[in-house]
Amino acid sequence: MSTDVSSNAHSDPAQPPGTQTQTAAGTPAKMSRESVTIIVTLLVSTFVVILNETIMNVALQRLMVDLGVDAPTVQWLSTGFMLTMAVVIPTTGFILQRLSTRAVFMLAMGLFSGGTLLASVAPGFEVLLLARIVQAGGTAIMLPLLMTTILTLVPAERRGAVMGNVSIAISVAPAMGPTVSGLILEHFSWRFMFVFVLPIALAAFAIGFRYLTNIGKTEKTRLDALSVVLTVPAFGGLVYGLSQIGGGGQAGPGTPAVAALAVGVVALLAFVLRQLRLQKSDAPLLDLRAFNFRMFTVSVLLLVVAMVALFGTVILLPLYLQEIRGLKSLETGLALLPGGLAMGLLGPFIGRLFDKVGPLPLTVTGSVMMVLALWQFSLLDAGTPVGWIIALHVALSLGLALLFTPAFTTGLNPLPPHLYSHGSAIMSTLQQVAGAAGTALLVSIYAVVAAGAGIVAGMHAAFLTAAVIALAAVVLSALMRKTAGAEQPAGAAH
Image (cartoon, rainbow, N blue to C red; front, top):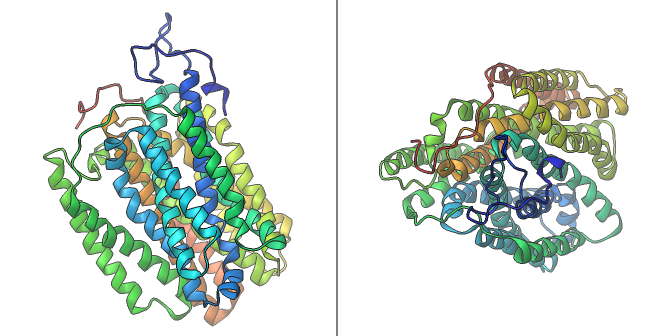
């Protein structure tokens, strides 16, 4: 963890845990050891649950053989996970307000650990799919919990440094997933992917049970049943429809995918209208008033564009390395590892830099690097040196690292405390939808062009599309401005 969050200082007993006191000079006191323990526990737990999200991708081929299922069926282990995430995340704003920090953590890690145990002993495909859905329920709660906790405990001028540590969880973990599963599958059964994660998950659960304290206050908010029901066709329909278009791109989008998208759009409109109505009585499931803050809106749009580019590349680049260059799954995972490590390990440094210079220089540099790297990817052919591909992937990863920390921090900083959990939930939900959209769009373009003009031409078209989309990030980056943390009490800003 960054030195910005490590200190032996204790907070005033009259204040909630982790609340910052002021020194004589007027600068915030360093965070208490209790606050650091809370954030580190949540950070490690988030790393574990996100690592699990991508650990399955390399194993699908093995699972088809071992479980006796076909490709469309086995794909549900990924699709089902994404669907559950998309449906659960919008409810986390309510969960984080209604339950204590400790209760939310125990719920998240309890679901994740239980799902992991069930997956490790699953006798067949149906039980394994159920286990993945249970895991996804826990994963969906963890990231908004971590974000909301950081906003509550960390003073605005140090949030960049702490948010930089979050990028270790959200970028190194997915990058390590394929490498870790490749190593495990080379020597063990697929069950060991879960056996490997389980003790880490249980240790995080035990540490949280022992040391985690409650922060902030719970509110007696009412759960709107209709809003919860609408999240299933709204976010579930969008993610499912997009994932089916991407997965079935060879034949073009089928009727089920188009129908799911249509249902998703209509249900999303109904969900938004319902939230706007509930806001009048201060009881929305997902409070959309966060969009009244201009930098939140700009930051969310920037993250959406970045996630489209990131998820599309995560799918396309391994496809290129395996289909065109003939690399094995473990070699592919190792080739992509430097980029993921670079993105995550530089996160804390970029966070501290953000605290000093603000978002604008970082996001503009990052978005330009992203566009240039994607454009270079569109020029790859069967003879491109693998070393150059790794270098380009590292450059793309650095560009994304320069976007993620400033966008998260700048977007969430100006929100008043009562919108922390809702802002985090909105960001996480839209990242899931954007990731599914990026995958669907780029894989579909790849499949359609490849069917007529060959695999290399398909790759060129898909990466060129990603580069064009990424141009929007350059425009959005130029709009970024430094935001101060909201000091008003909960309920002050509407």
